[in-house]
Every structure is written in C-alpha cells, then in structure tokens.
Amino acid sequence: MAMANYQTTAYKQTRVKTAGPGQLVVMLYDEAIRQLEIAADLLNSSTKQLDKVNNSILKARDIITELMVSLDMEQGGEFAQTMFSLYLWFNEQLLEANLRKRAEPIQIIAQQLSQIRDAWSEIAGKTTVAPQERAGVNIAG
Image (cartoon, rainbow, N blue to C red):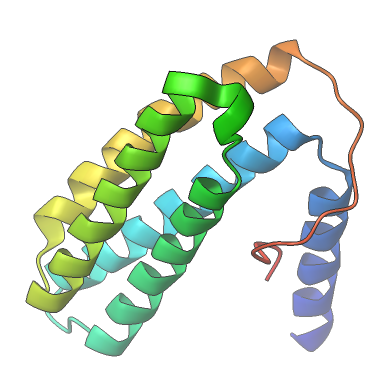
C-alpha cells in the first residue's frame, strides 16, 4: 500500500512540475472543487466528521487564496479586480459555511468554481507556455 501511495504522489508531483501556467490554474480549481465536494458530502452524511469537513474547507480556501494572490492586478485590469472580489467572496462564504456547518453554500461555490474552471480549461487548451519554476500551494499531496 505504501508503494502505491508513493507512486501516486510521485505522479502528482511530476504532473504539477511539467504543467504550463494555464494547466496549473485548472489543477488548482480541480483540487478546490474536489475538497469542497468532500466537505459537502461529509456534511450531508450521517456521520458528518466535522474535523474532515473543516480540513477540506480550509484546503479549498488556501487554494482560492493562492488563486487570488496570483492575479496580475497591473496587467489584468478590471478582470483581475473582478476575480479578486469573487475569490474574496468565495472565501468569506466558505468561512461562514464552515462555522455554521452548512453544505448548501459549499455546493454553490463548488458549482461556480467548476464553471470558472471549465473556462480556464478551454483557455489552457488553446495556449502553450513552457512550465516555470514556481512556489505556492502544494496540490500534489
């Protein structure tokens, strides 16, 4: 079992290191959505597992914050400002949902992130930029 876990981690790390900037953004969205789905599913289950709900929401908020701070406010203009405000709103709503342990706002944000993710995926598929050295949230595991 440990070998399979190691291989999965190695694969994820390689995938992140070789991804272009657009692909990385899509991967961030994928992980944020995955974490929110985990949290919502746990809240809708009979066991609730509130510690895991909290951890998943915190991971999603970290990813959204990473997306927020990666915005180029100088070159992005009004679009970057709008996305910044949207990310800020997402994080505020997730904080509130986490405090109140409500699944509905989490599901709504996951749906909205999914729509944005689809747009980024389309953009990333049309552009090719070489991967770069970068620091940030570790989505590889």
